[in-house]
Length: 384
Image (cartoon, rainbow, N blue to C red; front, top):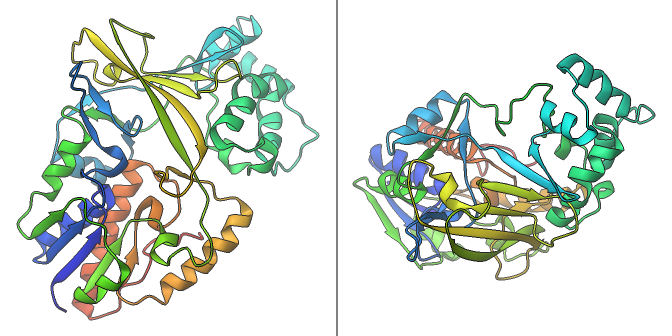
C-alpha cells in the first residue's frame, strides 16, 4: 500500500491517528479548514487577562481508560482538577450532580443517606413502569419537584425540545448520589493540561512525516490522491447533504471580562427561565494553579445549528436514525475513506472516548495494511 494518507480535521481524532501512522512510517497530510488546530478543544491565552480560555466552551479531561491517560500524559503535565458544578434555580444555589446536600437543601431536611434514598424513592412516579422519554425517566427517578427545578427548563434551553420528545437514555447518564460527593465526574483520572489542549495537539502532531495545512478545506474528489482518507468532518457534508442535513445543536458565547472573581466557581448552570443562557463558565477557575487579576466569563446559549455554524451536539432522535442510516450505507460504499470522531460518526463523544477510538482506528488501519485487507468505513458503528 502506498504510504500516503490524508486526515481531515486537526482535532483529537485526526491528530491521534496522524501521530500513530506517522510513527509507523506513513506520510500524513492533515487538512484543517479552521485557522487553528485542536478542533473544539482549542484553547488559548486571552490577550487582555492572560487567562487560558477554552474557546469553544469548557473541556474537562476525565477517564478510566489507562491507555488514554498514559497517552495524553506523554504530551502534557496534567494538573489536578475536580469539576464542581453549581446550579441556580428559583433564586437559590445548589450543587450538582444531585447529591445528599442538594436533596437536603432543596427539601429543607437533614436526611441521612438511607433516609434520603427512601425519601427520593417516595417522590418518584411508580406508575411509570417503563420510561420511554426523558420526562418519564426523570419523574420516575427523582420525582416532579426535582425534575422541574433542575431538568425540565434546562433541557428545553439546551436541546430546544420538550423533554417528552427526548429519549430516556439521556437522563440515565445523570447520577444521583446519596452522599456529599460533589465531584461532577466519577472517573479514576481527572485533570486539566497545564498548558491547555492546543499545546497537547501541537505535540501530538510534532512527528516527522506529518504535514498540517490550516485554512485548507478538503474536497471529496481529492481522495484519489491518497491511499486512504480519514474524515472527521460531518458525515452528511462529505456526501453533499444529499439525504438532508443531520440536526445538531450549536452554541453562542457572550464573552464578559472583568476584574476579580465574577462568580466564585468554574461552572454555574441556570436551570429556570430567569435567564436565556444555560450556564456561565469562568475560565480562570479551570486553572486554579494560576493567579489572575482579571477574569473571562462565557455566557452560553444553545440553539439549532444552521448552515455555517459550528456543530456541537448531535441530537440523535429516533427519526434522525433513519436519515443517519442512509449516510452510513453511503459511507460503507465509499472506498478508502474511514469516518471518525464526533462529526464523522454523528455521536456525542467525550475527549477520552475520542482518543480511545482514534487509537483503535489507527491500530485497525495498520492491521489491515499488514494483512492487505480493506479498511472499513467505520471502526465503531454509528448505529450501535
